[in-house]
Length: 41
Image (cartoon, rainbow, N blue to C red):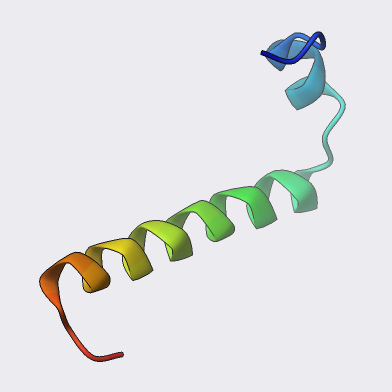
């Protein structure tokens, strides 16, 4: 695990960074879900 506490990391992130992180996670989940279902993007 990282030596930097998660709370410290989040507290020092800007709103844009947090939003970008959330969007990236959602996109990865969507692509993974589509891959599991075998759908063509």
